Image (cartoon, rainbow, N blue to C red; front, top):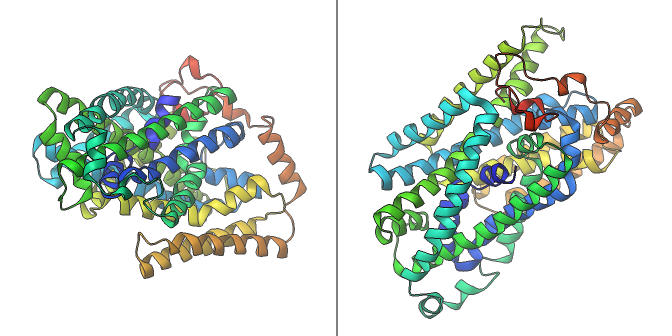
Length: 467
């Protein structure tokens, strides 16, 4: 669980982008990945047990359970946009890695890397992703922490040479700027608490203890990984002080400073980081598209009548089809875009600006209502989108004002509308306590589906049925 959780949160932006931030800002460039680690620690210690007890497939289903329905479609659209952009972010990173590894054009690199991820995600579902994540976690640890980090520092002349060659600002803990750090906390720390891709990993934990302490280990690993990336980027600044783009630092130092065998391992580590996040985001995107959007639209077209039972195998086939469709869309969008950090910022701005307040409000404030939640999602999402267009994607204002607008809408509308039905709140409390979950939530996978391993008995059914 620790390995697969660390693998999903540390992707191309954390590896290639993290080294790039170290190249640009020095040790304080670690803050982006540090805030990801802080968010994972907070999720694991304070929220993971509650989330795993709910026995739901998606964040939108959690909101439906808490507010009594009607919140799912609009929140599903926001979560779908987030997971789609997160998958795109990781897929863009293939271009950098395959350019070094195989010297192929950018478009071919994206198609090659994306095609591999789509193939094993479609064929094997969450269990195949868990297995590949474990391998990728080991390769990433060896390649980045045990090989690239010490070699980069030695090639730069050691830590003494780093201090001699670079300005003092490169070694100030807050050198990147307090406002930037605060923005990272809002976007990434809080984003870890509510992301569909992260929640799906929590659903796979065998029990509360595994979710809590396994996630804590993964969060601590993220903190180490953050510092390593910043140090590698700082060393690259000494060796290659005039790169055209900070994001080229990773590929440049790997290409020119590592011997052939080691270079292969480090590039494999970078691929592992990208593929693990890409596959996790892809399967989350497909789950949201199927469960929260397509299924609800079909239900609305039937006038709310339940669909005839087509069997578990057909459900698995439907989930696989959505993974394939979403995977193709991700590859196409990745070819059209270019900047990894910008794509990641769009994803998290939409997620946090639209969904943070309704989700945390639902967990912490019993007076929150479905009307308040829906208004909060709409106001926060639209505010963030409009301000990103006005100020620029990497500006701080969109998330600041988006969160304030979302919070104000949630509180005001909730207080102006009738409280949530006590029966709904009672059901919610039962589920939070681990009681009252639907029987189907514990049912084993059907014959012919991807069976849930015995080690995961009692885990969420999404671990083995193509989700």
